[in-house]
Amino acid sequence: MITEYGVAVVRNIFIAVIVLLICALLFFEPGLVQYSVIGVLVVFSMLVLFFFRDPNRVTPVIDNCVIAPADGKVVQIADVVENDFLKDQCVQVSIFMSPLNVHVNRFPITGTVGYFKYIPGKHLVAFDDKSSERNERTLIGVADGEQKLLFKQIAGMIARRIVANVHLEQDVTKGERFGMIRFGSRVDVLMPKNFHLNVQLHDTVKGGETIIAYYPSAPMNKGMH
View 1 (tube, rainbow, N blue to C red):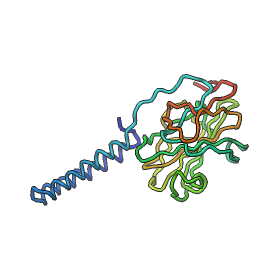
View 2 (cartoon, one colour; view 1 turned 90 degrees about the horizontal axis):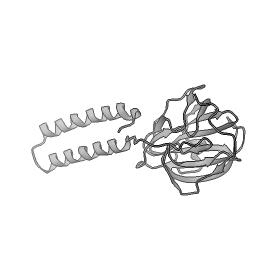
View 3 (cartoon, one colour; view 1 turned 180 degrees about the horizontal axis):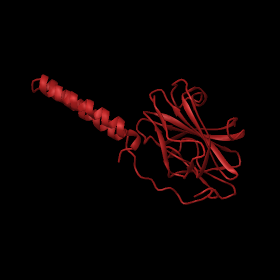
């Protein structure tokens, strides 16, 4: 299954591949050059399909948990101050997505979008700690009653396109797809310090499935519709 966000990109790429294949067949005599061109185009097409894959995920039916918003590896766990939405000290869990990971992003909790901001920026390597504050990124805050968190989609050195189908006052569901970052990137999840982490540094997580933290109390289903 290909992500809906990649359909247009895949369509345009495959049109270009077909044109190149026709050119290779018309302008090269059968032989090593023609077969090499065709082989490269076929491999490239398979890589594109692989990158835009969108497997189904089973989100845990647990009220007071935070789900990983992306596939990848936990590259940082740090105490930080968040001044945009939480406006307090919090814990940050950073997930690095390599070009081999699924790049579809999912909402980590159920609730209502209370904050959204796009910030243009640099394209440092996504696993660099400074990328969280310097790179191109979106900031998305979700609240459910007394509980809330903020997460960031951060473009990396290769990634040049952030997709975020999100708007203020939008009701969202934990595990629901909302966007993607193309070709290697990072997602930071910033949570209140009283959340209990369920992951450690270097853990591998799956978006929509892996529980990265628990609320110490207050069920998170108050805002569900």
